[in-house]
Length: 331
Image (cartoon, rainbow, N blue to C red; front, side, top):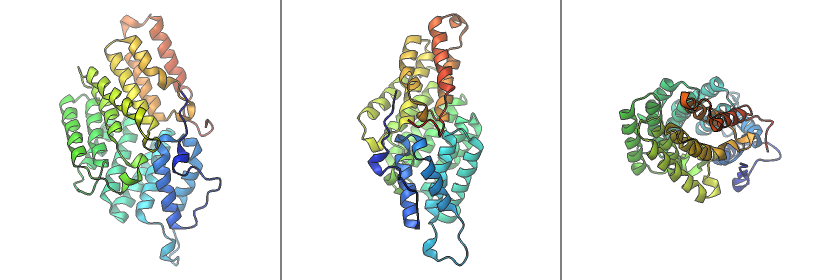
């Protein structure tokens, strides 16, 4: 499955990377955050690194104030860079970068929205690394921020609490967190991060994808997981290019596959996973590969061990995971 690079919608990668002013640096990181979900990382990585370095370079004491990048831009630059490091599989560097961005958000920018969003970044990184208790801790810290000015990031954090609780086997806590996410959606007002969009907004389609994955881990909720996943896919099929998220669409598809695997419906599992296995290597972020391997695990049943169709699907999954995202695999 070849996903179209839609970076040109919002300005696209530049042939030359120069950010001579704080204003241009701020505009650049906001554009990169906006296009990231629907852009293959190799095509914007070089620019992202340059923007982050410019945003976080220490200025000499005698430099004029108008040469300094504002704290929110620094926080966002580090947050988006942490996301990229995570997508490339560098978990420890990603968490270190996210922590630095959090300090920018809390100490310098004093921006609750950025604080909550960066807690979400930390939680997501930890979760996909398999550190689920750590992911829950980060999610709770973000969800506990009480500020009416925080937008959809609050919905994301409650969704992350639900996902981590479900993964740990606490169905009651997960269900309560899903209700909290639904309530947060009703109360959320769009903030500055939501207006930027991309990585910084948590749309209803993403919420449905997260709920689908959460319900996969709740016993007896497989059919509801499939419904949530299909809702997300229906939304992504009709969504405008600048609001599309390739990874979240794939999360919805993997969640449907996992639900069918739990139900021991092999043909449906294969059909649901097929579009994921066909995506180009430049879109195979590390977190997606780890989710796909969960399907491989769910298929490991004694009664199925000698079935050709199960073995073939597992082999396809293994082949998919052997070709991870690389900065040299841009297509």
